[in-house]
Length: 371
Ligand SMILES: Cc1ncc(COP(=O)(O)O)c(C=O)c1O
Image (tube, rainbow, N blue to C red; front, side):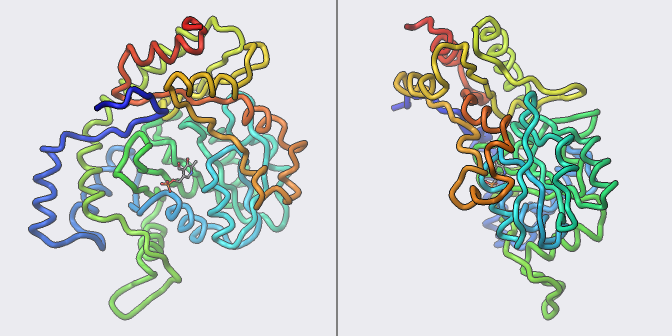
């Protein structure tokens, strides 16, 4: 029986009969992981698709981010956003650094580049910015700032697959950029991720870091992790890549319908991507303002009762979590924009096979048509 409830996302999968022959190839070869042929094919296909020089696949974006930070940022203080998924700060701690939270911009909800400079101290060893919802950070400003201070700039680009800014893939920005291929993401390999870097020496270092640090059978150069992507995940990725144009188009259509049908609802604002952007519609966040006449949480509950499960990404803020709230930069008075956004945001269902009728059901609930 099909579940009549709607969720914020529903993973896209290719036709099963196209996947079976790839599985048969893997079974026949008995090469299951450790940088096999599908792994190599997906890395080059992604370089081509994204227009980037080097891609290193990994098990998931969390491990990818740990490797990126380990490779680029010595332990110290890393400037980041409180308005993200917890992994963004957890990876900072796991690599021996402390997060320093900087508030976000009201329009994009990405780290406010104009406030980053004031947070730089002699202990700063990196900036970890997030392209929240696949909406680009102020990439030009952040790059100039990082260069001026000689600080590595790493992007948590978990949401950014398929997004472009200034006619370039969003993943081509920063010293390193890490994307997630988790089941809920636009492009999924069930679990997975990738690190994008700019030169062959960095790629080699990352490839070693994701494979225990091995250089060859007997030589180990780095204190590495096991973060390799398996052949099955990579084979699925090759199939998924073929469907990307359709997926992006369908998401854009759904995004446009939400935008048009919610534009006259008092107290509901949609987040609008900045200029020169081709957005990927990784999520569809709305802001439920005071003038809506019902709180964000009340709307969330009402929709849930009606079988529509939205998500409050990102609430609570990372800086409000027990393990981070005692940091000086976690003081809510220092993060007014992120704090307000965390109480107002609601991410609506968006995925390629969301039917027009189901989307209309979501819209009617927000508009109060069904009340
Ligand atoms: C902003 C952000 N960073 C990192 C991650 C972690 O990605 P993964 O699940 O691939 O480890 C996520 C996952 O949703 C995320 O939203």
